[in-house]
Image (cartoon, rainbow, N blue to C red; front, side):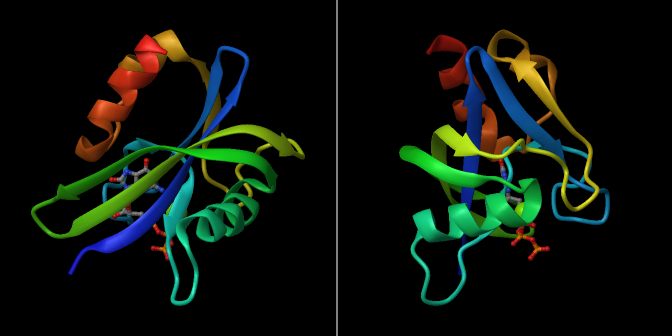
Length: 127
Ligand SMILES: Nc1nc2c([nH]c(=O)n2[C@H]2C[C@H](O)[C@@H](COP(=O)(O)OP(=O)(O)OP(=O)(O)O)O2)c(=O)[nH]1
Ligand SMILES: [Mg+2]
């Protein structure tokens, strides 16, 4: 069974906020768009808002679904709901101690993301 995940592409002007997955996690050592598993009884947008508060300390004020991607890793299958987060309150930070950074869209391809994110990064380079 695939796990459902909601992830936020937090944008401000030409920049995107990304976080480093810790080594002990699935796809550890890769950069990610903050987010996490959709819990029982939640829809993906609710999970997004909860995860962005937990991981980055922001309130999501405006988000829209950007892409849905299903990907089979060797060890697990994921269904990823990527949202563009264009309005938020608070200053995003690594609330769980994770390393974070703002990057220019055009520099996204220089960061290593999980395999499932490749089409997302490509699409963001074009927007
Ligand atoms: N958050 C996030 N997860 C991603 C991305 N790309 C990608 O393949 N994933 C995968 C890695 C994980 O298998 C899964 C997300 O799970 P997670 O570990 O973030 O879940 P979570 O925040 O609920 O954390 P936990 O309960 O496992 O501690 O989705 C991405 O851009 N962002
Ligand atoms: Mg997470």
